[in-house]
Length: 194
Image 1 (spheres, rainbow, N blue to C red):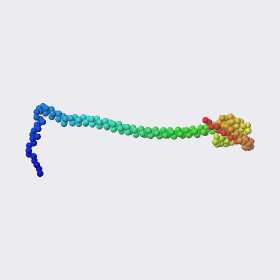
Image 2 (cartoon, helix red, strand yellow):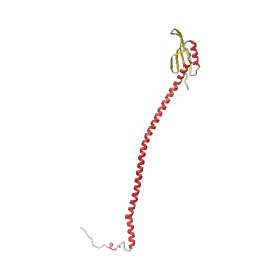
Image 3 (cartoon, helix red, strand yellow):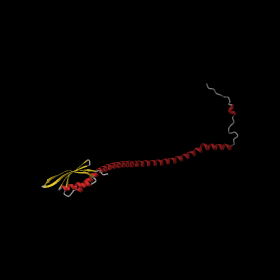
Image 4 (cartoon, one colour):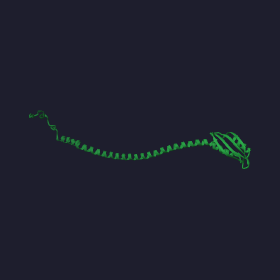
C-alpha cells in the first residue's frame, strides 16, 4: 500500500531562499569563483602535470639510455676483469714454476760447479771415464798416464771448498794399446752452496 502525503511541509516553506538579500555583484563573484574552482583550476593542473610529465618522461628516457650504456660498459669491463683474473692466475702459476726451477737449479748448481771444477783441474794426460753423483757423493773413474798426475789432481780437488773428503779409493796399472796407464777410482763429498 502506497501512502501519499499531501500535507504541505511547513518547515520547507519557512526556510528562506539562500539568495535572498544577496546582491547581483556578489552572485557574479561567487559564480566566477565557482567557475575558477570547477574549470580553470583543473585545466591549469592538467597543463602543469602534462608539462611535468614530459620533463619526467625525457629524464626517464635519458636515464634509461645511460643505464644501457652502463650495462654495455659493465659487460666489457667484466670481460676485462675475467682476463685480468686469468692473467693473475697465470702469473701465480709462472711464479710457482720459477720457484721450482730455482730450487732445482740451486740444488744442481753445486753439482754443475763441481763438475766444472773437476774438468778444469784435470791434467793434460788424464781422462775421466765415468762420473756418478749419489747423495752429494761424486764417484770418479778415470785413466792417467802417471801416478803423479793422479796425486796432483787429488790435491787440487782437496783444496777446493766445494769438495771435501777427497779419497783415492783405487789406483792400478792397466795396459791400453800396448802402453801402461794408471786407472783410478776417486770419491769426494759435495758441499752444498748457500
